[in-house]
Image 1 (cartoon, rainbow, N blue to C red):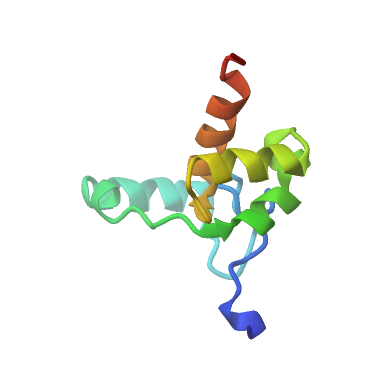
Image 2: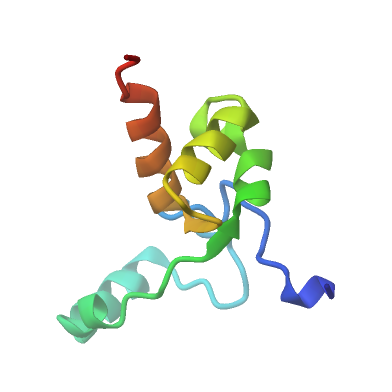
Length: 103
C-alpha cells in the first residue's frame, strides 16, 4: 500500500475539536468569526467528514487518545464489528466497552 493511501496518523492536531495550527490558510480569530457569521446555516450543512482510521491506527494511539491499553481498543472495535472508525465513533465504542458489566 502506498503511503498516500494510508489514513493520517491519529494525533491531537488531527483530532476533532483540536486547535488549528497557524498554517498559511489560518485566519485571525476576528476574521474566522466574521466568516462564520457570513456563512450562517451553511456551516452546519457543510460540516467536513471525519477521517476514518483502521483498528491498528486507533490501537496505536490508544493510550494518548483513549487512556487505555491498545488491546482494549482492539477488542472493543472487534466486538462492535468495526474494522475502521472515526475518532468520535471509536471513543463512544471504547467507552461503552469499558462500562460493560461482566456476567
